[in-house]
Image (tube, rainbow, N blue to C red; front, side, top):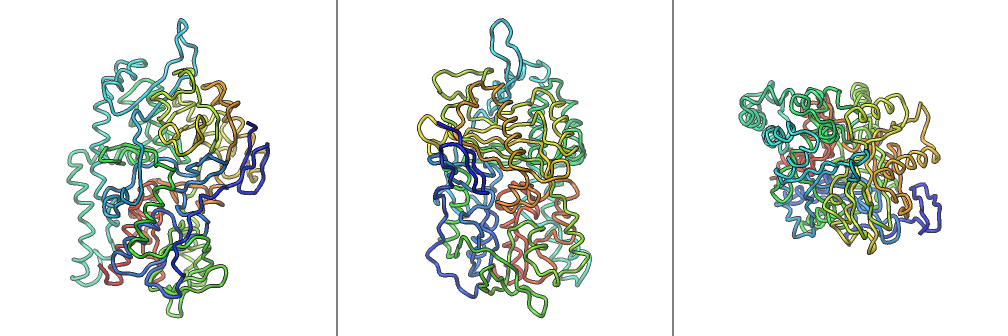
Length: 580
């Protein structure tokens, strides 16, 4: 089959028409009304979660999504005929268990394929005496992990169980903070005694966190502030293990393993849970859009009206300075008591809120939020399963390692550091960090028989190349380079490619509304977490405009923690409107 290249700009090459085919999320049969209690701008997973809880709480709610498909970044799209991709986000873990249970997402069609093992790092090296190159495979079997690590270091193999237990203890302590708004500092420090006592309840989660941490508080402080290498070096000596662990500390972030704060992102990635298995990540059947569809199904069952292709032009602000609803770009006005924005804070306050309604101080502060992204996502359709030199499998048959996150160019931390430095100098990495996943190995609904969908989540690429915009030639050159590296690990990969979809940081911004291409709706750096997410005076989901709220990943607890921002925002709205 001839390869095809797809982009949302409508270009195509090769003999296969690269059209997006009917993964359309039809609006419900509801008719858009002119009045609601609450309106949610954006049909991403957090917006849908907020809508579901608002409706359950007695507020008539509608969701307005600008694209033809629900889900925001958690979408499934058939980019090439017969190949269905998780086009942006690609793995599930940080969906909060209480939301999964409350909304009965399993009943509403959510099915997850658990991965075990979950990480595979092949080496680029010559095998010894005809043996294949070495590789590192990690999973839930601790004894297997130790055997794998001992290929590189017996000392590291012995230390690994204690390291995992240490991380799990720290991650477990954070859970109370994920499911509650940050501390209401103004409420605790000012106002009447009654109001102060009410606000004091917001201290409970942080007290619980402190009690759980106990003597580990200094360790927790270190991991959220230190470079990940300062955390890893005392534990381990082998470069492949350190590099594999370090990828989780820099994934999606324009940072290096030696930069302060990279430790928190690693913790962020081990605090997830799936099917009661801590730290587990899985593939959603039908792609990540399956999560969004299940949440939407639950929301509709409660009575939420959900509409696609409804592009909000502006939030309506009354003469009293309060939000009164929205006006669509086609001129339709819809009124409501509350408006929740699932867009990034930048999109919300720079594009859909009238600038005259905002103070110059707020506008200047919004401009300071860091949305830097290192990510270029490449979705690839292949007619043959990649066959790795480090773990060859015959006859196009998948091995256990094919279900993993496959870490390429992770032989050493130095490789990651070099890739980062190149992007900071305005150039795409010559030897990029590549996280490959092949979900069709476990989910047969994604590709035709014998074929597969491959996700290449790559770093580091700048938003601008040496000060100029990306061109189509730049995109293709970068993708070609990535494919050349994959080919070194899995010869024959390039010949198997049927089509590819290359999404640079500007593409992720334009298509999915991710400011700067940042998958977290804003960097997960210490200055943009908890009380400071997205800004110190915007950390409680309320905006300076009465009746306008934020409910997206730009709020606490941040990107990747699926559902928590939407849930916390819904509770805030219901408290303000006296609904329970």
